[in-house]
Image (cartoon, rainbow, N blue to C red; front, side):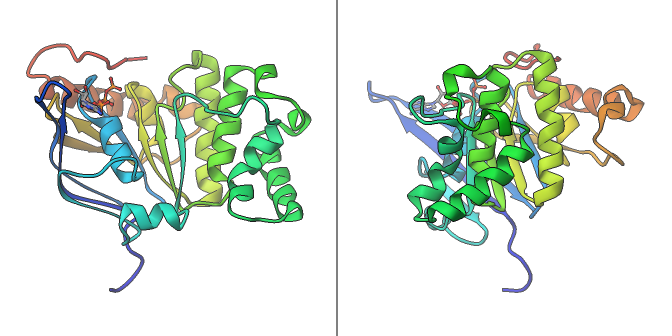
Length: 269
Ligand SMILES: Nc1ncnc2c1ncn2[C@@H]1O[C@H](COP(=O)(O)OP(=O)(O)OP(=O)(O)O)[C@@H](O)[C@H]1O
């Protein structure tokens, strides 16, 4: 093999769930997608189109029914064992009895990093997310946005080359959400991590992504990909004509995917 393997390679993936009553749910059909190292790719599509399912397959939380997934050229299971990626899902999932610092250090602790190494890394991350003064607080003393920042810091603790994020900002108010988007952009620029990001928000996808992958209703397929290349992802971009063009391009593709019906579960905010 030559060069760096792609971060994520999804080839002709099918996923069929068997229901308890003996039926079948065809969640994904013939999905193929490559994510390059350092690339930010968002998945968007109507509710139930299989975005979270695809994410769970990449993260080795479930197995494919057909096709193949590789993460940095390895099976998802091997990549999980090698800690090649960090995960941040919608519910921050922090441990309430642990302080902010102890939550961030958890993956390091599990993988045997000594106390000094853990403290060095959690100091860096606390500075990065601007929560140095909250290191000894517990999650119930934090706002939703702060909790999400801690969850993202925890996902980055082991400096993964890949972040898997399933609606990480879905529960946040608009102001906090935009702030978190700015922070995520800065974090990615700093670390060069590739990101696969699930969202219901078209502007969020456009603001963050190098490519937005549009999926169809069940069985989920990729109906199109919108390429975005902005000079800078900063506050000015949100008011830029090129940004609105990106939003329109994604929305048009989504409406096509819905065969004329308004897409359910996709927000224009
Ligand atoms: N464990 C499971 N057993 C049976 N069906 C499932 C299972 N997990 C997901 N599904 C079904 O697979 C389809 C895809 O679900 P998935 O959660 O991936 O969609 P989604 O695009 O992430 O939806 P949303 O945008 O609403 O979060 C849905 O019809 C769902 O009901």
